[in-house]
Image (tube, rainbow, N blue to C red; front, side, top):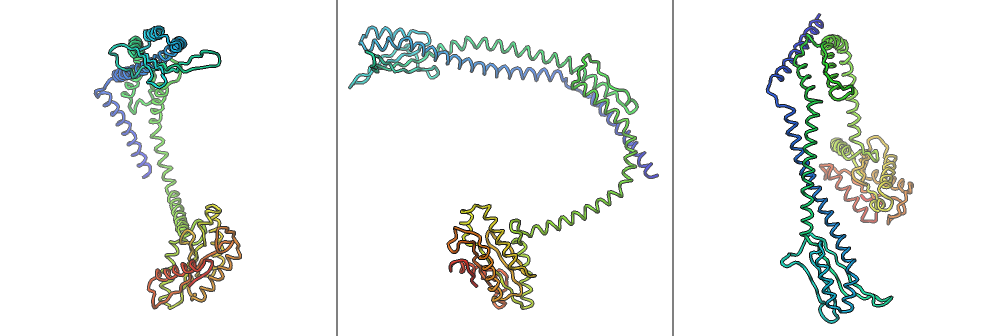
Length: 462
């Protein structure tokens, strides 16, 4: 009965939601609107202006580059025409002929300045220059510089001068101005035609149909959801408006089916509520197990599988307090791989990781009794915690570890103490009279480790 009353209330809420949506559409239709066509016109005009300016700039730049290329080619052709005659006049020292040729070159249209440099042994070169009076030096026009050579007889070539041709910048600007007017006119015409075509097509193909859809949606109520939208279009192809028409009709159909589906959903929800509670309990148990596994992994060194520094720090404090409380012996070994940096440099870091794994395996087999803890506390540094073991027992265990490493015979060509991988070991025992913290015991073990290194490595010190 409660489910029936709840389903009825949901149905009423759904009908109310449909009415509210219809009212919202009606209010939106009655509100002042900004014409989509007007915004399209403004956007198209703005785009046309920007497009026209960009296109004119690009085409003007292209025309300028083309004029520079053409003028360079013209200068090369002029040089090719006059090079032989100028070289001959210089060689024959015909001043009148030389001046006549230079004047002829300077009067050619694209040439703005001519400079002829004639070398003279033991004296400054003679310079013959022609350019318009009052014309400043051009920085934009291209220039061409050529060496003038003359062959007085077969097999002989003599350098007689250097010819420099500077293009006339005024000619460049005149050519560009003549092209620019045509560029602007044609680009403006293209942009105007394109903008007009876009606006006409948009109004014909989109605007009228969007207005039709808006009127239809404004008239939709829960009572007429079965009246479908039909756009009056001649085209038979499917496009975005066809998809929008189908979407509106599909939405109306879904709204009509909503009430019935809501009732079925409520019934299914009641049936699955208990099952959901069971699943939650199962997932909670799985999550607890996963958290427990994660907690274990956070205490394991991922490379060697030994305990990491965090686990070592947790256990050492507990064992230290037990040794203080029960007056039991407690020893620590600090082990360091000898010349491990050289091992990495010689065999590579990947092989160095394998070496650390081998060392960890030896430590696991050597210290496998209950209560003994082996941990990796640094890059190549390991620590062994030995509860209930005095200094003599710790030294004996360290000697077994050295022997086991020797038996492994892992090659180490960079070592200075042995042809195989070795360890230096520092041994320290807890002294209740002088040590009130575990860090003091660890400090003694560290000092012993350094003594083992100073004494030649591959040994233990305590």
